[in-house]
Length: 118
Image 1: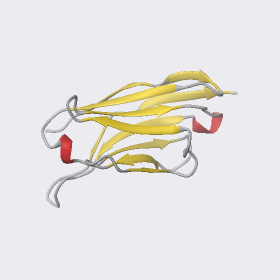
Image 2: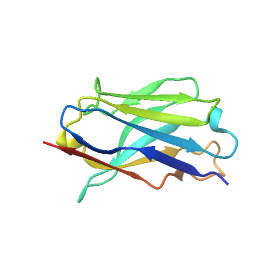
Image 3: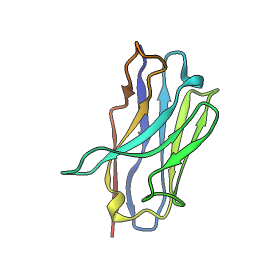
């Protein structure tokens, strides 16, 4: 069974930085695509960034140039470094491990609150 445990986040003033971490249990992490999503109150959950097993990354336009996703396969951990934070980045952030085969499910972390004050 895969478990994703998130840490980091919290409260920061606009322009500040925060980092989120997501530690995954189970095998297959090194070949898994990992992603960070966020959900603000009253809005749908949206993709923030994703990273493949080979390190290729993809970002939402709203965070390009400010956020960086990275991974450490030796630690089974994926990170989201968030710089130049804006109030509109306020949301609950979720880590996701994409399924590695059609018979598997996607896995989600429990979510971490990020609050950016103006």
